[in-house]
Amino acid sequence: MTSHPDTSTWSPRTIAAQALGAIDEPSRALVPPIHVATTFIRDRDNAYSSGNIYGRPDNLTVREAEAIIATLEGAAAAMVLGSGMSAATAVFLSLKPGDHVIAPQVMYWGLRHWLLHEATDWGLRIDLVDTTDLVALKAAVRPGETRLIWLETPSNPMWTITDIAAVAAIAHAAGARVAVDSTCATPLLTRPLELGADIVMHSATKYLNGHSDVIAGALATRVQDDFWARIRRTRSILGQILGPFEAYMLIRGMRTLPLRVKASCDNAMELALRLSNHAGVAEVLYPGLPSHPGHDVARRQMQGGFGGMLSIRVRGGEAAAIATAARVTLWKRATSLGGVESLIEHRASIEGAGSPCPPDLLRLSAGVEDPEDLYRDIAQALA
Ligand SMILES: *Cc1c(COP(=O)(O)O)cnc(C)c1O
Image (tube, helix red, strand yellow):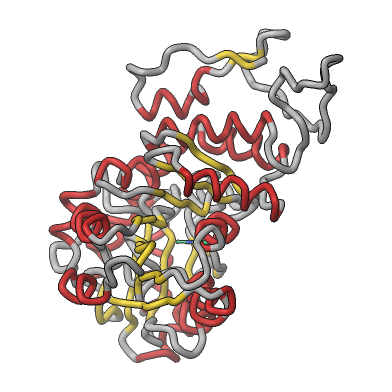
């Protein structure tokens, strides 16, 4: 069995570095073991006094990762799943046919596509609205029918900022829950549950793991209510759990989360400022810039930085943007984000028709490298 000390006075950096101070009691090992068993011995009286029955609903190594994420989010409980998409879809598939859902116009494209084209087949009624516009959001809410408002902030790939506390007040007045895809804010920069959100979702593939070598997702809840129990059941029945090896890798990655997030935020801020003055750049989209429409809300709802993600709109349009991405040598041309290495991507090529992403946009995921190296490489590519 794994033991944990009292961590109630620990800061997030200490919690992450020590993975909640977990110790494997039988061996006194500083690193908890990877539990691979898929099945467990029943007691003679037919009970399962260990609490462990089978590997699809739950796993001990997965529970260790969940305890860390729950603590970092200030949550009543957390759940780790096989990917960010399985975390998100577990929430939507725990709603009921006919339920009305509001989601942002600017959001992770894979989830937006699924909501618009496939979730409707399950009977969900989906409206995409500009969630940064509280008047438009309020007008879209149907009291008694709207069950969930899904947010993403900062949101892919324009880094728009939604006021979580304001949306939570609107949602709760209408009897709806609020779930926040907080992948790009990480548990360090924003704690959505403290702002009134009911559920937080992460693609743990990104900052939480941080090394571009695990696909994983996470959910955290403010209260363990019936809806949370339904989501747990969805994960168990659909088999959306993470494997124990990946859960171990995720725990290992999270040990340096605060250090990596700080380095990425610092790099993103410096790159945003310097690229704003580059002749080849028409516009920099980064919530840390006072010119960004979401800057004031971001200042209130994000602490310690504005995230490691920014986008640039390249002067000369789509062809110039693609040519810029072709000329970088240090930045890696690849999808995904939140790893230690910096990535650059022409998003419109990925998102396809119906995307709000402008064709001249390059998305930058600032890693933890030396910012001078990063700037020099992109500046020559833009020249
Ligand atoms: C990557 C990502 C997802 C999807 O996560 P996967 O782990 O790839 O399934 C969802 N939301 C955001 C903001 C993401 O960046």
